[in-house]
Image 1 (cartoon, helix red, strand yellow):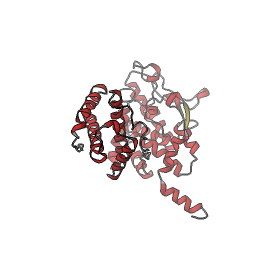
Image 2 (cartoon, rainbow, N blue to C red):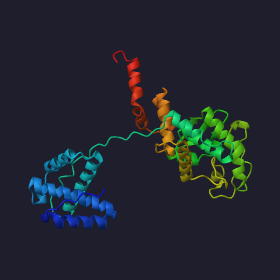
Image 3 (cartoon, rainbow, N blue to C red):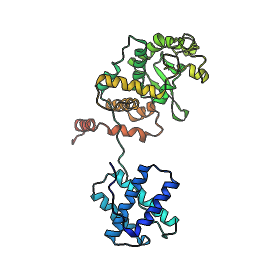
Image 4 (spheres, rainbow, N blue to C red):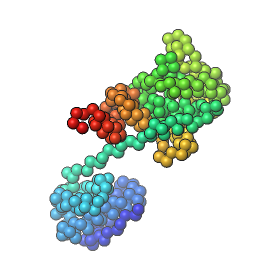
Length: 338
């Protein structure tokens, strides 16, 4: 939607044009961003001139700006739009001070409105099940894709953690993944039975064929010694850049090369479309669903925090607000005065 044009008071037109020229040269903004700045500041100047009756920008006070913000609120603008307007006004008054056109910035102490934190999108258990059952597990590609989808939902790992997952991070005997997350922090994440079987099937039955395409070794999962049940890549993908870490990636393509983020996106999109789910389905939605379904099932917040690899429990707490229906049910069932 194009910004609505406001007639700029002639007395302020030159100053506004100087400001627009300044942000165009100094900030290197896009034409759309510059148009938004011009729209926001132009509407503000019209208010200052026509409603407040000022002809000198040096006379603008914080109260005048608050009055203008009340006007924007009355127009039913979103919190995000009001925050953008405040930023535009702040920048304009900072420019006026920089050019010695005013002595103070009355907008400096205006706080941005706190925007409500957007709740993460999640899939229902039924929607997850339909996507996980979509790959044809009788084919090599289908085995790999099923393992990827089961891993995303069964462990809640991030896409970056998935594509860099190494063979020696799989512990089939104890049913765990050793995940290396943000800041190289390690954590152990349990593998449920469906995810474990899907990954093990991929590693033992399909991955060796893909690995051989790159001229490498067997890529089979082997058990033995202290790492009994741990997967081993052998010399799976020799000759590819990145050395041993690249060679030992769990998930590879048909040429034996590591998968990219975009490939994971395409895999998720392929099977979500195939199932006819109308929601926007993307890899990270499995992480959201993993956490939400655990909490809905009664898991404690600290355990979910550990499995997700969140440094702060506050980050995990957002998932407690996703299903308010469940909270009402719990309250009604267990509170003596519900």
